[in-house]
Image (tube, one colour):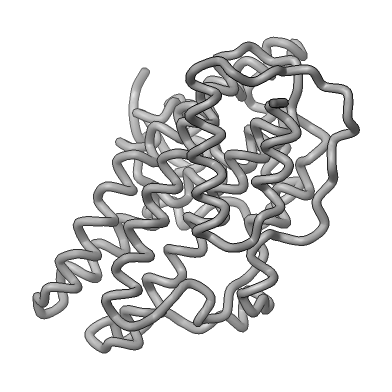
Length: 274
């Protein structure tokens, strides 16, 4: 069984349960070294996200807003948005392992660990949606994460900069703000479950960003480029840059590999010392 061919199949499966089942079978084989790494086929440039067959895709500004979190529908909208991020993240991790060839085995180990975590996160949020009588696919979604994978499909350096070190790192900043809002609401069992799930996701996403940082550093060294190329790459794809400087999660970003000099540029002031 070929590593890359199996990943290509999994990436093109749309139904969550089927994708997850095939991934778990694949990952079990990978861990027992029962896959070959011959790379003869041309790498596929995916043009449509796997979820497009069951999700209604709209422009980001047209996605249902996450508000009124004390209501059932408000909680469904929030959980659906999180589920969509986690489901997209499964494909992003698998695509990172599929697309970039000839790297050290540790690279593939790392991104399959990330994919396995994202599967668990998705299933955890999907379960909460089901408790509320909803399913993934019931609420509109956008394509922003898939589009990021398309834009960076030909550059390992840019992929590591954009996906783990920008998009996923932004989650390290945004999740504490969501948690703060939830913790101010009147307590009920679903709110408690959402808070608990988000804390698990936040803690484990730090490791994902750290893995991205390690391989971004690897790519910089391979190409003899200074790490500050990161800011050029982000400006190229995201001219608006980062979240408001005061909302940066300095502690989490430091743990995930960001240097104080990088954080100074983002925060526009000294926020830590090496």
